[in-house]
Length: 338
Image (cartoon, rainbow, N blue to C red; front, side):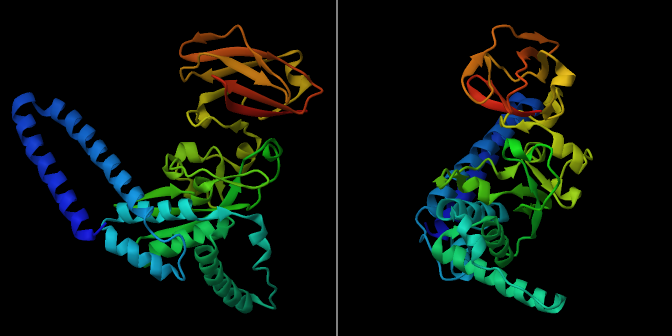
């Protein structure tokens, strides 16, 4: 799609919106006008995203350099928002996660100067390999995202930190096991994780392009990502690494950390709960609650909603190692049993 067509469509859309807004303002007043304007803006942004994502699907699936891909981005998109959307879309559509990539760029060094030189050369090699081969681990995804943003003059930086993805992550010490991105749009920072947006890895890569990790709400992002420098979490409350470590797995995309009132600790012990575990969760329109200790899924017949909080209990099976709770047949919360 040629850039002048994109610009014409955008100008037409904004002009039409302004004319429509003026007519509505005279007829229905300020309050209604604001509601309509926000709704129309959302619809236009959604249409822009669809256009950008469709354009990216026409791009080559590999490039010799970041500069080559960046030229396509410059040709077809104009605002920082459009460019970042295009960058993210291309990466999640064309890069597969492959843990063997960890072996490609190991190196040793004598001193910090040599380390810094080798790190810079290694970063360039990782970016080039990600573009040409279409495989990477989190460094490849994040470094390519960073490089493309830099080429477009967009303020951004890499974030290293820890993640929670499985039961074994509950209660373990902090480690720098993942890399993601922060980029600035219209003066505000936003979170991106193109690695997780590309799909999932369970013995092999499963391509599942997702935009959940595009400009993710920081409160939702924080459930599974803890940055080395806490300010990069972009949330107001301060939560320690120890608290993050002992949190349960919060799997449902609708749930935030503050929605879990009890149990707050992701490690459940028989000495604390005896025969039954009582749960209190800020409700999110749940019709059915069920659970599994790793084998069959059992339904909970009795649940109660009090003051907007969902109350239910699960019998404790102390000889089990994990507990997975489902809301409406979808995994929602995970706990370790000790």
